[in-house]
Amino acid sequence: QVQLVESGGGLVQAGGSLRLSCAASASIFRYKAMGWARQAPGKQRELVATLTSGGRTNYADSVKGRFTISRDNAKNTVYLQMNSLKPEDTAVYYCNAESFSSSLGPYWGQGTQVTVSS
Image 1 (tube, rainbow, N blue to C red):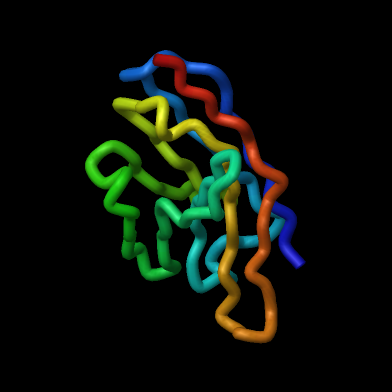
Image 2: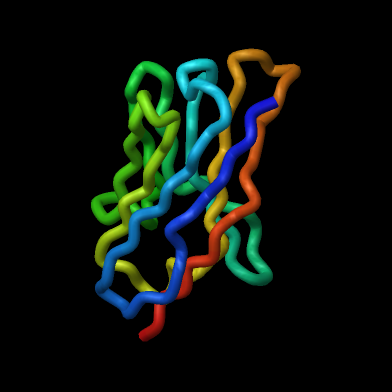
């Protein structure tokens, strides 16, 4: 089972930027996809960005053009660069890893808080 540790959250003004990091305890190539999801108070968890082992990316419409997911294979780390942040981006952001096996995972980190002030 992989351990995922997020960092980089914080308080930022609207229009600002943050970069989240997700450090994995195992090689990220072992997983079908790595992703970022967020959950705002009173709302369901929403997947906002994914990066497959083959390098394909996918984004939720709400963040397209503003967020970028990337990885550093040598560091087993996945990043989420968030630009032009809006108050509605305020949420706890979670890193996840999707296994090639449907009987395993998905695995989640503990989350990092992002707060965007207006």
